[in-house]
Length: 354
Image: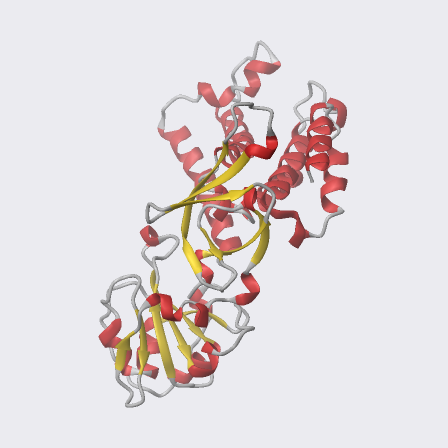
């Protein structure tokens, strides 16, 4: 892996971007991991703007399809990258060409003194209503593309057929409309057994309640995935099971199950995490590649707190002694753990623990 990374950096330095792409794409997508995915996005954006061996020269040619492909690649790892300065820099680089094109359109009558000045056109945009609307249109377009990519299971497209013919329970509900539920519940009418509320990834958007609902069979299904579940209107879930209404205002982190008499009882989180963990989402990674927002799955299948950040620490006074490097993992609850560099661990994205 280290040899490949060194070779990729050398090819990138020599403007051999196609060779970078061929080498990375020769690795199955599921095995690339975060770093290679970001480097693949970099290679496509550099190829789009510069071309191999600066084939574009001083012309103004930019391959828009390759730029879009670079964005698509980088967005596949946005969960890991949103707090990574390098990922944000790469995304900013590809979006910069959007702004440049916008600026050139607004400043179409401007005389440019050099190629460099023209490429920096976005810095000369005047703060006018015209430029404001142009930039706003770009941001709206990119947000729309992101939402269409990230939320392909549009909640409004999922219909809870098990609610057909049942009277509305909370017709005037003004809280977040969408919840996560399995198709067994929403389509086939299975009884709800468990309910868990987690902090939505994009709480500020206001559409997701954070609630997830599962039947008894779902909780025992090791192959439960997004093909068997999705977002539904929480009002329809309440029509299917009116007892859910009593749960809606409970805080994030709440896990409830129905007992034998059908009453909701709260379950301690650490007793139920494994039952609802999506096992197919667990991935093997080297200790140094642990990601922010993930949780470590320990050998006994217990889960660590959510990883806040990861650092490399050299425990030797000799900076060149790589054997003394340790991986220091800091968790959101304030605790930390240290691992040897290069050991294999298991991790799972925190939202895949339902």
